[in-house]
Length: 353
Ligand SMILES: Nc1ncnc2c1ncn2[C@@H]1O[C@H](COP(=O)(O)OP(=O)(O)OP(=O)(O)O)[C@@H](O)[C@H]1O
Ligand SMILES: [Mg+2]
Image (tube, rainbow, N blue to C red; front, side, top):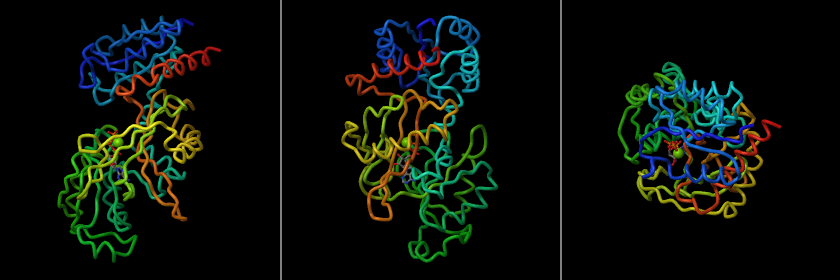
């Protein structure tokens, strides 16, 4: 063992501080070094890929990826190829490309729709034809949320409902709605509502399905989103803090994204005991259904919405998992970087035992 962990970033981008790094990157590097290990940051660029593979595979035991997949020079394929070569050379990947895709893609929800975490009527469309065939009937069951896979901060995440409330109340569930049905469609990026017919809106949404990694997830609208989305941030198996993200009040607002005006409050995990208990039981199921390695990601988040079970008690529905570029920049005083370092080192030690 070299007792050395490399941290990958890309140069530039809005997530970087004055030192050219994500604000939580150097704290992680320093925390690894404080354990007597070596650590440094390398910027990935496709022009240096060969050099990086050579140097890193000879000098490091593991990598930590701190890269936003939407922001990689030359595209994510080149970067994922490099990470795969390092894994083949025996390095511990935090995370591997397969795990990043499985956890980070929106259809993770569909892989969990046979668990209590996700409503069972959650589906994904990978073909335009399948979308046009299935969605008109899906919408007859009630309000839906359509989620594109690419992009973030609520772009291409649509709350979709019938414009005519009487029709919505009277439509026979399971009947395909006609293409001229009037809709109200609200995008999470800005909570703005647009008028479309069903046919027009489906044509508009085809762009989300076409192309690399294209898909559209079709999920039931969870009305208690107005009470907020509850994010658990984890280091490995350990929840380290909770963000309660409350959408801006009023209108059709449903978005918990920051730019749409949602308000964030930060809680200790202990403030949400029922959620944590539920999640503790669900985590192994998530690891089994999503992970290639059986490991949950090093730093990741799971977002929940409140719902009611059949006895009127609170339950939690999973809305999204993030794992590729999760940060904790406003919580650097909570000792999270030390937990990240300890978890990373223990994974390397276990792999080399
Ligand atoms: N099923 C749902 N019911 C009600 N509201 C939802 C539902 N799914 C998503 N939302 C709302 O839409 C917002 C955006 O959706 P989501 O988190 O899935 O995508 P995103 O924010 O664009 O992705 P990322 O968080 O990676 O940037 C959520 O924060 C939540 O407020
Ligand atoms: Mg989100």
